[in-house]
Image (cartoon, rainbow, N blue to C red; front, side, top):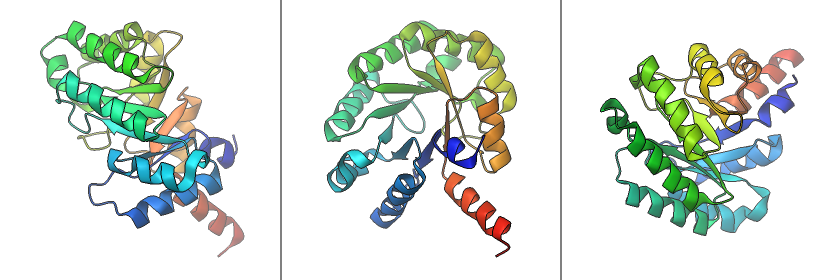
Length: 223
């Protein structure tokens, strides 16, 4: 797989609390130059990106981020506002406390409500694998599938760990045929990027992919 083909699966990400408009513009311009799948940005920047770049940019944002414990009504409101502002894809964080308490039906219902709010737009469900047991990960694979979400996503990148080969392999065994996989958190080399794509991930969330490709080009040219 070429680096360009890999970049087409990347959600080019800038979610730092102190991200400036200059940071976001740089992200968007890189996304357009390298044809990444989307930019994944804080909700506060959606409308400004849409007003500035229009349909040149596929905008993804986060909901209930990064801790997941907002009540469902708040998450639904976040989705509705994001879509109204021009967002196309939503990455939601599940209520991790509910998962740890074994309230899997409640988590499934929240995902279902957010998918209804998303309608035809893509919903990715972050389950934050670093905090979960294998049994809880399996339960979340089933909940994401049953609720009709489009993707299951490993991590926020703000937890104690990120995507792992073992978690993606587990997802592939359990999720339904209509659910895709997004790996995020700790994808920091081109080898990581290639590995997760080869494992079956349809999307990769990272802030580093464009920089890695640029560095590889520099090294190949001997600069």
